[in-house]
Length: 87
Image (cartoon, rainbow, N blue to C red):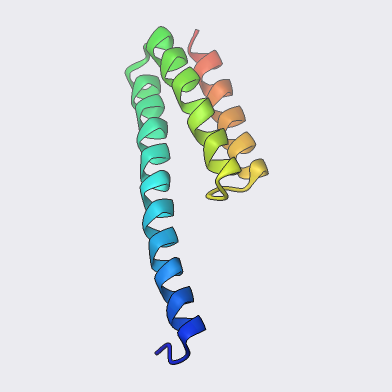
């Protein structure tokens, strides 16, 4: 348990950041799920549209420190190749 004022403040900051990052991660996963669902349905146009919507969200997660840059790039690359293979 936090005892010093500094550690109490850090605990509060960590809670706040955790909540914000959790919301961001959830939002990004929602966009990724929409791409996955479009791929599963076999609709290339819908999948491309969903991927275009998901890309900036993923990269925003990188700038906010939720994901590593290479992780986001890898996810985008793999999704893009799967969308491309639908056609």
